[in-house]
Length: 297
Image (tube, rainbow, N blue to C red; front, side):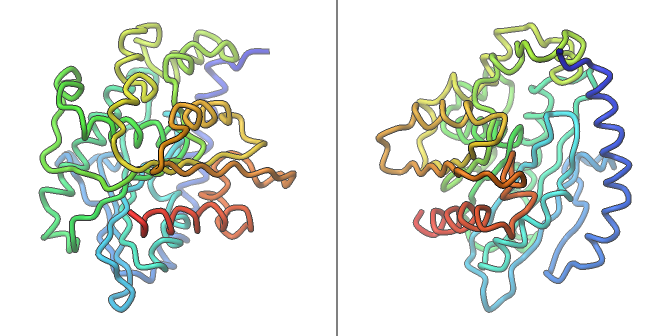
């Protein structure tokens, strides 16, 4: 049975209801210096905001992580990744959680990437005012956010690609990109046979069958421009594992590529487990690997 469009719409609506109840609890337990709800588009839209958190002064490394959340392009929020960010804050990394417009069936990946570029430009343009120290920036993302992180890293090394998209970075040169349970082949994702046509349009918008657009915004198509260290993780139980395996095969042999593939029967060790359940032993292994990777580069 294929996944219908109304199922995805219901998932997104239910998620928003749960998130609305959860957010006050998250905010009540913040202990790090922070700047919340920084609007990078000047329009008051919460999906055009980011939250910045700063490590304790005696631990601070002068290294910044910019994190892009996942959510199948249609749900989730930057606030869902706070618990993930705390892992890195405790090790001296500053952490910025990015948001972007979620697809309600009328947008495309191009619109969401445009939001991410605008956010990164705001961060680099206002680094001093935000209190960011140093210029060592690491880009992370999970699931759909992994797709965005990979593509943004490729764009940072390809002005021609940016020109084709009509986008431009002001001063963004990430040190490394780290992705968990990522989308890699956007063309294959948009044409997934497990979804009805309505579901595909709900997830990817009215241009879902525009293969040229999907190719332009697919990390797989621009892998030669991924000229910086890459960390990736997946696990045996997760539904996007083949995407990570494709990425691993494509980067095999590179000295600056690290890949962790978790083999576990624990039902919690599933898609983006290290983001959702960072205290699991398997998640600690992945996140510790990320920390050591960033310290190396």
